[in-house]
Image 1 (cartoon, rainbow, N blue to C red):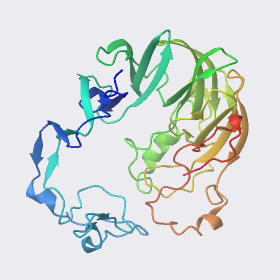
Image 2 (tube, rainbow, N blue to C red; image 1 turned 90 degrees about the vertical axis):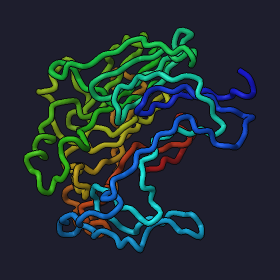
Image 3 (cartoon, rainbow, N blue to C red; image 1 turned 180 degrees about the vertical axis):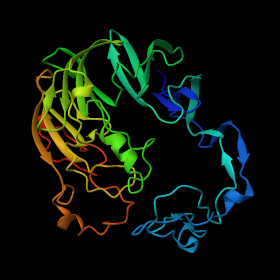
Image 4 (cartoon, rainbow, N blue to C red; image 1 turned 60 degrees about the vertical axis):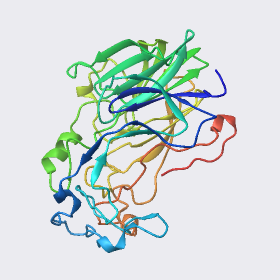
Length: 362
């Protein structure tokens, strides 16, 4: 690899897979890779009629209180907004959608028109047998690519689940585990945050749909024997009354409390696993309209991946039923807009296995 091509990365966009190389010695001028602009209708450049608000929700901010500062070029955000859809333009807003592609000190080495989903996917990369593989996946399907040569990427395998017999996919973390002497994947599963429920305050029937969904609300651990060959080692429900379950038990028979674990678990391949989630329905003091739970932080010992052990659960006073007095002290209480509780597992700069003592929670 030359000094001019020092970094190779892959990024997914809605158009497809791009192989990019960063150029350490190149002009500062921005390069236009493609030019495509779509004008906006005039009615999208004005605010629509105010949406009806529920009691406690913030009002739409005064347009004069936010926007671009012409003197500094810095955008000023509104102090408070309701949760809602639609454009809220300010005087400096573009009157077109810019779909052009730009590059700065970057060269497109290859492009592949492949996507698993056009809106959102997860990726994970592993090295195995002298090859580098990338998983691109979402809830109902995955594709595995051999990306060893960024200029000659190939598809290795793909699969679309049968929702009647197979478990949906969730975000996973792959690390080398010394006990197993192989790569293992920790994969999380949680209740949906959008697509079914838009306003829990007015849609009790859809709240019931989510409460009664049948799947593992927690995580599973797999041993990776090959890019498309995984062996299930254990399955864990976050509810401490349940804990580890027999993977052969149908999901329709599993206890259905809590949120499951949110997004990518924290794991470095050693002893400890950290996930965010509501272990029971008690963790439900939550303002956000489409989320039923207020996630805590959970720590597990998975030094034996076949027998995970729950170590602790940590949450802020005011997240659980019975803690309403503390919850009502939060200045965001009652606004039906703010996200309460964790959004992700702990951010841990140095793993506890290597002497780390601090984790940071959002």
